[in-house]
Image 1: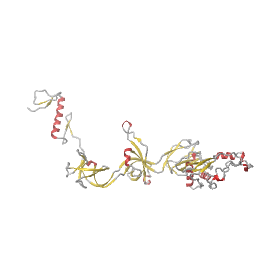
Image 2 (image 1 turned 120 degrees about the vertical axis):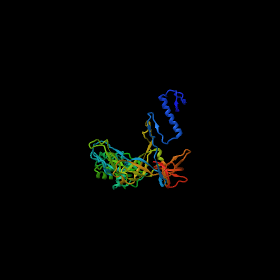
Image 3 (image 1 turned 90 degrees about the vertical axis):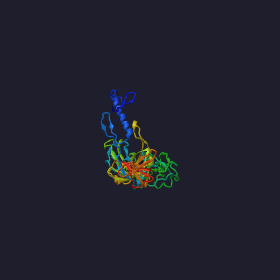
Image 4 (image 1 turned 135 degrees about the horizontal axis):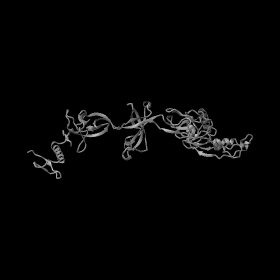
Length: 460
C-alpha cells in the first residue's frame, strides 16, 4: 500500500499508513501542500528553479532576480560633486508702487531696459526717473543745508552724468539748515523786503560772524552760505539748525540745487531745484521691466509695474543638511534645457530657512535658497526663465580604481567585497575591498589583488 501523509486538524499530528481514515478536509489538503513545499525547500535548498503551487493548483514562474553583467575595474578621475534642480531667471525682482496723486500717463513696455537718468513711467506727464544707489528717495528735498544719504544718491548720480554739483562738505563738517524753499519765497514776498527798505537797518548780530561761515563759503558748498543774510533787511530771524555731516551723507548745497535745476530741465521737469520723492526711483543698476500691471489712466498711487536686474542667476532650494558641501565662490556647471552647459559660481547662500511642506502630515525637510551666477551672459541670452540642473563640483581624486556601485557586495562580517568574473559563468571568487569616494554611480575601491582591467560582476 502506498504511504499516505495526512495532517489532522487541531492537533497537527502526522500518522502513517492509516488507510481506514476518511479523506482529509479541504483545509487539511491545503496544509499538506504547504508541508510538502517546506520539505522541498529543506531538501533542495533555496533559489534553484522553484515553482510555486498556488491555491488554485496552477504553477507560476518565480520573480526574476537582478541581471548580472561583467564590468572592468577602471582607473579614472573622480569628483565628489552632486546635481541639484534650480530655476534660471532674472535677479532681484521688485514691485514699483506709485506715490502721490495723479493719473498714469505713460508706461514702458514689458522687457524694456531702463538705465540711469531715463524715465520709468509718467504721472500727469511728469516723469519718474531711475537713479542708481542703495538709499531710496523718502522725502522732498527742498531745504538748503539738509543732510542725508538720499542726498548723496542725488549728488553722485548728477555728477556721474556730467553735472557740476560744486563741492560737497566733508564728513565732520557742521552745516546750517535754512528754511525750506517755499518758506523762503514767501518771506521774500513779504513787505519787509519791498523796494526802498533800508537794508542797512538789519539787527546787529542777526547773522553769524564771518569766522563761522567756514573756508568754503565762496566755493558753492552751502556750508557757510546757509546763514548768509538769512533774515534779510528788516526780516524776523529764522532759527538755523546745525547738523554734522556723517560718513556717506550728502548735503543739499546751493551748488547741488543749481545742478538739480539744470538736470530737471533736461528731463522735462519744471526746473525748481526742489526734488519730489515721486520724481525718482532708486535702483542698484539698470533694470528690466518684467511685468506691467497698470494701464494709462489708472490712479498713480497703485502697483504700477515690476522690474528686475538685467542679469540672470539660478536659484536653488538646498536642503540644510547639504549646505556643508556648498561654499560661496564655489564653481558649478549649469546644464541648460537645450542640453548645453555653461559655467557658474555660487554667489550667495541665503539665511532664511523655509520648510518644504511635501512630507507626510504637512512636514518636510528645511531648505535654504542658494543663488548661482552665470559666467557667460550670452549663453542664457534667449532664456527668460527655465528649470535647470546645477552640478556642484566636489573634491577630486585622480587616477583611482573605480567600479559601478552595483558591484559592491556587503559581507556578513562587515565591509564590502567584489565578485570576480570567471569566463562567462557567474559566481566567482569574492575579493574584499576598501571603499573610498562615491560619485555619479561609481565607487572608488582598493585592496589586495585589485587592479585596473580585471573583470568583476555587477548588477545591470
